[in-house]
Image 1 (cartoon, one colour):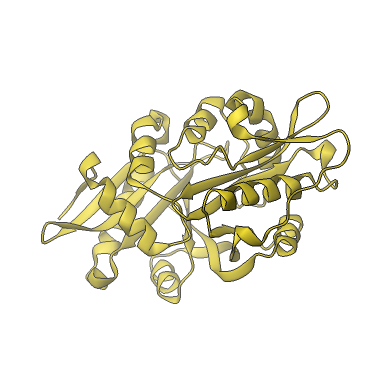
Image 2 (cartoon, one colour; image 1 turned 90 degrees about the horizontal axis):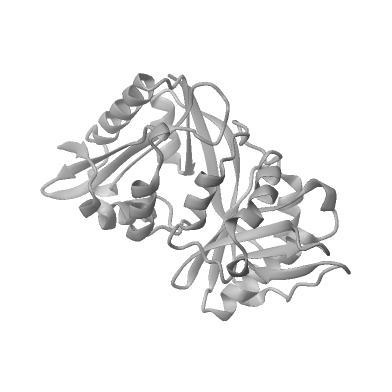
Length: 296
């Protein structure tokens, strides 16, 4: 049986998501937060598949509200390993894509952890690879403390309001390699992600200039002893000074002090600057994240 997801499914959906990619930091609380706060213009559909009374599949998709690109949409499907090859994923995917078409979608993208099985299924459904990059991990207890050039200081994002960080993130996002530009950054949407359960504001770090303006940042999401990096970036006028590296070092060292033993992240192959930073910090490859796309 396929039906729309309810709040009672949150724990099962968190388990399914982690089974698809254990590098993610996801929880039932985060799923509920995003569901209850997502804007209507996102036109999100969230479906689950049930078998013998248990949730065994997820299909979700909506319009991409972070871009001005006409018709841009996103989708994701995963099925419990024991219930694959029964057509569940095919049907979830079909219904999600039909929903996107009904709400003006003309193309869709999907971000997922690469597996041979996943690529084979996606290709058979008409998807093709748009972008890829190594999924990497490190033990943050091995990371050295940060240093900064004169005139800058590091703070926890706990000390900042989202409005103080927004402009730096918006500018850096425009330069992130991605198949669809992040050129429709909205403060309300940013606040919604800022408030997401799991967003580790104690570890997440920002670099301030002499005027107290945020010029670099690095976000972490944490659950127990595992963290994953969110976005890291530097505003254009302050690049090439090691500020993103310092922000990442502070975030990693603080997470280690709070009991985290593994941090994961991924970057597009085209993002040479961030990949160099991560190599210097000691990240090592454990897999690959990919973005696949298709026309609708």
